[in-house]
Image (cartoon, rainbow, N blue to C red; front, side, top):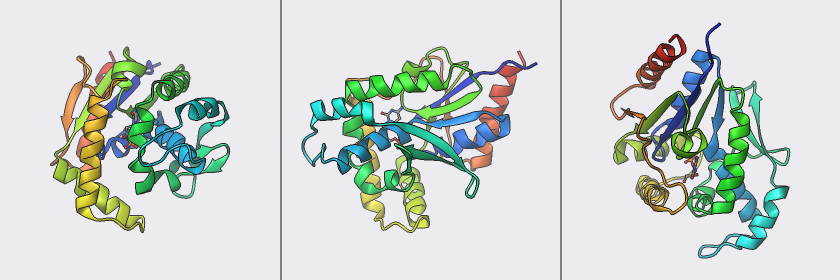
Length: 230
Ligand code: DC
């Protein structure tokens, strides 16, 4: 019987972490957890309940509300996607809008939000056999993960990918605005005080700017197989 491992995928916004993580999970028959979706869901809740504006967050109210925010994932047979639920409501579409994207970095920088999410993420990993993507998975959530990948790609390639994804989903978008948003998020994610995006010392770096999705996934699956078969 092969041992099960935890695969942590960290990296900048829009470099294809979820696509890569999903692909690997499918090949290894592992579970997949998109931690960005969890921070996006808290942000959506804050927007809906007017706890966040352009320049402020009602931190006390949000902290008190965390107990009322139940986040779960459920596999959608139709599009073969792990959809995100907020208190039983499918919010997969709503958490991907620019409105949420432009506020999520401020919400995910709050210590009490991170503590609550990290707690849940660790629980999801107790049985191992999972691929988890985010910003702090290899550094904070699972510092002992058997395989840590730090994914990167150049900013123009990333902006183009996110832009195409938004258009593909029927959303309005401008390439310059998308690029600006992801550069701002890079900046905030890398420089915040709580669990900034850092490359874990023992992470392997994968730059997928000029790789196909399949090539990127193959690269990681081979590394995972070596560890699993050790
Ligand atoms: O991966 P994403 O773009 O869906 O992530 C949304 C935001 O959540 C991103 O701006 C950074 C934050 N995030 C985080 O701080 N820690 C994680 N583990 C995952 C995401």
